[in-house]
Image (cartoon, rainbow, N blue to C red; front, side, top):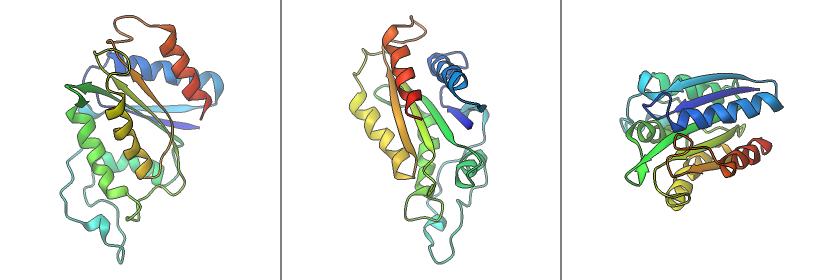
Length: 184
């Protein structure tokens, strides 16, 4: 299995990274796996230009912006990768800007485009925040449906509040991770 991990947090040792490390460690225990980890802050990802090129079904084409977003997502379109782990912090009730710019480019991959993920690769989504556990779940679940709209099979969403795991790791987080990995 090949796992591609995209981390939207600018904090390279923060909660998103710690949780993705826990997920990857569990996957590596259960599967033969290789992993790529990408921090959006280190990447060249441009916003959607609303050119509508991806919507031209008579002349199907990938997004005209040839940047790191395409390099990551082409791995799934070409079936070179099996699992996406996407992790983002939630700032002021919404996904941070880095995560938002990445997800906005999903517009080029909906069912009305030639870039839709017909092979339905697996996906695990992680959202972290400082509020109490579950506080932002309605918002988080709505954002997670965007991954399904481009063809991912979402195995699970890990919603980690109270600043965890930096503030402390609890058994519930470990159980959530084990449950999600078992659905791969």
